[in-house]
Length: 444
Image (tube, rainbow, N blue to C red; front, side):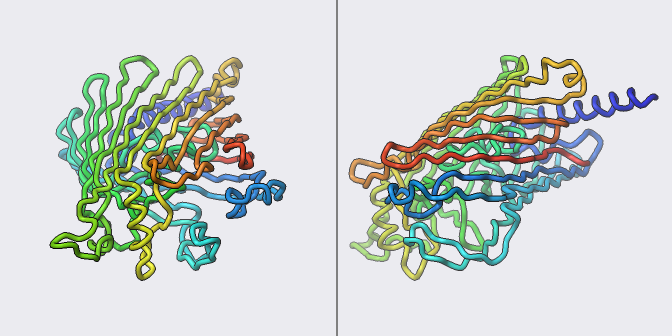
């Protein structure tokens, strides 16, 4: 076999591997089982390196006193947002296990942080650069293509970003900002999942530990609600999630997903939110803090185009009461909860589209290189208050991004984007320039 044929053979193998991997990316919770047939052990992962230059102030008062910080100098950052290792094993007879270990922002250590909700107070954090998380750890029994059951720590696939969060599934250097702001990302929790595929449909239904209302906030809505400051996850309440995807139209995936569960009385100690006794009931026994989320998303990949979009809307019941409780109880004995208010609703809408311009050049097309020119627009608001709640209009944002994604190989992408964040007229807009490189694939 001559050198040219060897090159073609390697390219074809890479394409087949990427195609197999992409087809397995029906849902992020399946990704660790995307191994080649015949291999019991699978090893893979993904990672991102990013550089940013932000042309706006990073002062904590830039929203409360925007005129004072309008001409502040730009600031830059280097980051490794995610570095993930997949490990999975097929025991046989339908029994498999999967794990996903993630290092965020280079790991953990000791560092200082400036707390925005504490008027800029500096605090010592055992969290240098980020954290190490076990995002998936489950054991699964497969009874057939249409019915599988897994138990353990699993991805909650609500929204486009959670179901398809790997870096080859979005154009921007960083994960799409709207969903990444208002929802846990990547949303992972301990519970049980039932999923399967039938015809042109894939379904999944989950029961997981409930969210904690004391970790909700103005700037992130329920983003931190799935976390835990303890060595265990409190599960006094449970959450129910579901997702349904359809593939009837070639190149098009349509998905709907949702979540429902109560978030109050799901902290430790159990009675923290109501120590005062009225008769035989505690003050806030009847407060549920119901969380309901609905989401629609799609991905279209055909004719050298990739177009993705999503719309999410969420509701927190009795948000104003929860805020009162947080102010009076959550800070008792320096309890590890957010003191920021949470809005009754939150929304995130986004759409992006990119065209592979290398498809028009025969040599580059044959070499399987790709260059997507893309644009993205999104609107989100992490704090939509009830009538009796205070207003914070800087939480409403619009983002416009455009840039390039270059694929020298199917598993590697070099990204660059210019993003302009538009706020209400009384605030200063926030433009930034971002450059990154990412990989995603299986090594065994």
